[in-house]
Amino acid sequence: MAHSSTDYFVPYIWIYKIKQMPRRPHSHHYIYKTTCNVNGKFYIGMHSTSNLEDGYLGSGKILKRSLNRYGIENHTKEILEFLPDRISLKEREMNLVNEDLLHDPLCMNLKTGGEGGFNIESCIKGGINSSKAFKEKIKSDLEFRNSIHKQRSETSKKNWESEEYRRKIEKSLFKPGRKVPRVSEETRKKIGESSSIRQSGNKNSQFGTCWIYNHNLKKTIKIKKEYLDNYINEGWIKGRKLCYLNIKVKDI
Image (cartoon, rainbow, N blue to C red; front, side, top):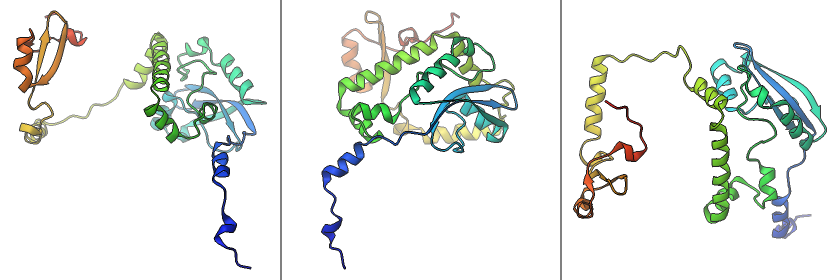
């Protein structure tokens, strides 16, 4: 018997409910330790999954750099313990990844455990069911956008107040023994000539602009030259003061 197109009609309300349904809960929750076999550094984290062979090694920033630098094959992952649910998993990670562990020079964790990050489950609780919906809410809802920015700035400030966190970032960015490629004088000259042609005249991003500063306001700004006379009449001076740009300059 042939089916008509109406036999496959699904009411819109049911499609909407399906999208709102949370993900199926994972069956395994465990604490793991990923160790770099080259330098002995390690990362401890938590993971929830339904497949114990999913190849997950961790999501830490320094850990990712280590994976890129030494390769996945030079890292070993071991499961330390299983937990019954996600809540107890977070509590256990909070106990293991503490301030004392972060002070270990071999530890690649950057913050204490249990905090987690942005995830789809928290979005669903807040009425957001996809990353697209999250972006749309960020654009349309000013209060929501401000709360997200405030939360991220507070987290960033808290991290940078930690000397250990800054030390880890500096070590990961400025690796000892990194070789700087040498460029011959002829190559430098060719690059300079090419850049001067490509960025000459109105092709230059700074074309038609100039710096001005104001002692009373203690500000330095960049404006279009066509408005320079107007600013000069209001007490501004042509030029640039780096101290007003919060740039530290050594005394000569």
